[in-house]
Image (cartoon, rainbow, N blue to C red; front, side, top):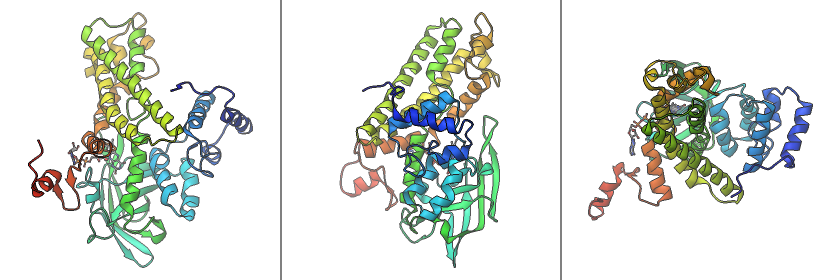
Length: 406
Ligand SMILES: Cc1cc2nc3c(=O)[nH]c(=O)nc-3n(C[C@H](O)[C@H](O)[C@H](O)COP(=O)(O)OP(=O)(O)OC[C@H]3O[C@@H](n4cnc5c(N)ncnc54)[C@H](O)[C@@H]3O)c2cc1C
């Protein structure tokens, strides 16, 4: 496996250089229109770029100091679902402002009684002439308070088996009847919300795909979510890495505590393994193979790893770790004081990261749900729940006359 990025002779580098000359201070709209926001999307929205070209473009953007617009849910998973199943009119209307970050998106999936068992959702959408009337409640909706639009799952046929009675809609967040209540999480930030939908009227044109076809589309969305959450940083691809923590300790002259040294070596090794799994995923796609198994395994490993990186950062911080806003540099000031050893991440980022890391094994599919997926789709083990009959696999196994599983 060749791990080095192609050099200056890669055609995407020259093409980007020419484009940057013509657009020395690119706006998000120009970046989106040129295909540089999501290069792997098909043309005209992206460049149809293979993974290596995508990495080369990421590298060029980094070197030029050009940042992609913020729209994690829009670019990461609403957009790919619209490309998969949206009408041409929906793509024309929604994708350009989505790519430019002019319309931020949120994801109206989870409900108070439907998280891991998402297909058990009870928000209803009833057809009324040219409109759908939606009533129900969503929860943990990240960015709902700043979003223009949401991807929404609602039950359109309560008589159908639960996976077949769900449809997929686009919901304007300023529509009459949409009420958003903030949830402040333990980091002190307001990132997610409760969303109440009281007889919200959506035009029929806001249905994505077929009536009753929402579950298949939800799987497309969730598949993209799991890949998007598995970047390099320890917090769902964002923020510091284990290597950043080790660099910080090295700058401070190292640590003597043998246990902390072992914990540092462990998270650094895990970080390297995760980086290689990510590169293997890229290589597999280039070679035309399916990356699915590696992507699921990586999400399960990366979530636990992120929590360990932040826990070791707390260990390094020592007693300072009990203070809000104190990071590992406070525990190891070295000769020049904490500022001299801190590195690229602020103490507040580390302190918040420690608190946020609890969410890693919950959002985007819990640790247990990830392991169920790996058991079933990677290892070929039976389903844990016979979903249509609403009973557990162990019950079904016993009903078939087999002895209980060990
Ligand atoms: C930071 C963050 C952001 C989020 N953003 C969004 C968002 O924007 N939009 C959105 O729709 N949702 C969002 N969520 C919600 C997230 O998807 C759900 O929290 C998640 O699906 C789990 O659902 P739940 O909280 O209802 O837990 P439950 O499903 O009630 O699970 C409770 C516990 O039971 C376990 N469990 C459940 N079923 C099984 C099983 N079959 N086998 C073994 N164990 C099981 C779970 O692993 C968990 O430990 C977000 C969550 C977080 C943490």
